[in-house]
Image (cartoon, rainbow, N blue to C red; front, side):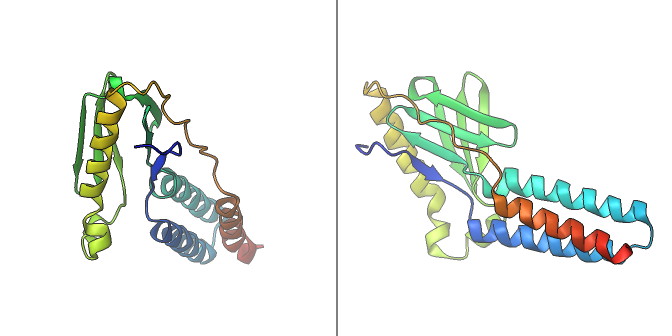
Length: 176
């Protein structure tokens, strides 16, 4: 690898944002039909938990790498490692697994793995990612001396907050 920009693997953004819109609409509709305040607040809580879950697993970048190492993002946090610490790389279905001194780290590409097998461009993605990771690992062990890529910015996008606010309003306004 000769480019300075890190390579990035992220979940399918169309599927992730579609799931966010469906979660807001479904919980907003269910909450709007609730008669009691506690039930409406319960639906708001369910919606906010769903949005946080979708952010962590379906919208954030999953994997970044360059000649210096890799950054893997999972539900527990951001893990940054130089290639010298990576002892094994594997890709199966829609998951990438990396063995480091922290243990085995895994990140998913897309949640509906069965849907990813339908189209050739997504069906071959895990194999292509594994080949690129192994090539970067071999190049990194060659002694380029580069640093692993910086950890990605993991702020929630403004659109997520706007959709959450719209969902809260959809649940709470009919009861006022």
